[in-house]
Image (cartoon, rainbow, N blue to C red):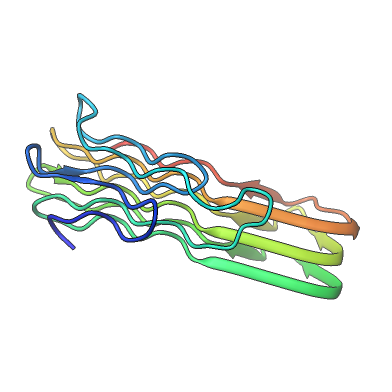
Length: 171
């Protein structure tokens, strides 16, 4: 919502003095908003080795909402998890939006946990929990959302795909 902190334990903070929001936190702290880093990003939260939660939302601005945090995906298989071609498992945060020069913060990447006897992923496969960027704003940019948390455990397999859990850019 506009003029509010982001949802979740790492929600980005809305700063009413500068009308901008910090990015949501999860695997790292959310980015600070505005050119002098006034709007505070949300704190680190969750457990690195065993992801079990979604990402937190970015703080809103006075004119727009912050981005939503990415979701949580949990796959527990006794056999093989196979990702062919361009298969993707994504828990990405969304971007904060901008209006009249004020931006909300980006949502944090969510959590992905895959446990299987074997994980096979082709070269085009993607596992992603990337933080959302803050929308570009003329002056009052929000902070980028933090990257999420990804854990994949298997006894065997070949993973030739890509894994990403980076933070989103400041607007």
